[in-house]
Length: 159
Length: 116
Figure 1 (cartoon, rainbow over the protein chains, first blue to last red):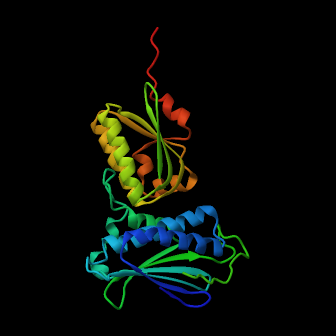
Figure 2 (tube, chains in turn orange, cyan; figure 1 turned 90 degrees about the vertical axis):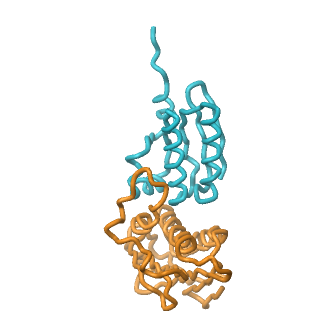
Figure 3 (cartoon, each protein chain N blue to C red; figure 1 turned 45 degrees about the horizontal axis):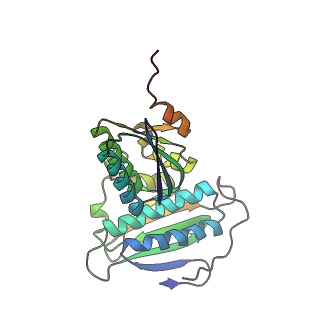
């Protein structure tokens, strides 16, 4: 795991669902550090949980040593979270026309809708290693609803 | 996740607490399938103490709803926190499940009419 000094955090997890609890704890603290309201913190935690779970289930090979990168950066009033897997990139992503059309009795397929509904910005791209990079953005400017003004602090997360 | 079953003559009330995610999903499915095996097909899930739910938890709820309906029963949810309600709204599952503000309201819907 790599930690870069004060603000931005770059982590690398083994592609194993048992690390989801660890990721949850990390983002619980990130949400507090950035002054998220309880409702907004919950949105962040669920969206990150979906991105991380998808990266493991759909974006990781069964080979030993497969990893999921989690990058947390802030710039220009935005908190950006990037979850990068080692799968097949954009080719496995369902077309956007299929989103929000999950059959009511389907037991899966709601992760993308949740990520879209629970973030302020959602982007997908292909990472240099060919995996899928999911980018969740949260507006952290002081006047954004759900943001407690003046509570953004310098982050120094030790893992 | 913690599950506590309260049995009455007409309905089981299952109090769900903690995280309803990939891990909790299996516990919930197990307990509801055991109740169905015991021929208890009317259930209320009191979700008041659920502090986290994701798509895996939603998948488990859809799964048990199908099981209960297949057994000829009914499943209702009650006391969803606002952030849980939001998850149901985004995924449009609020149109699929019977959802009540209070456990009492949910239980009432299972009561048989009194005949005089």
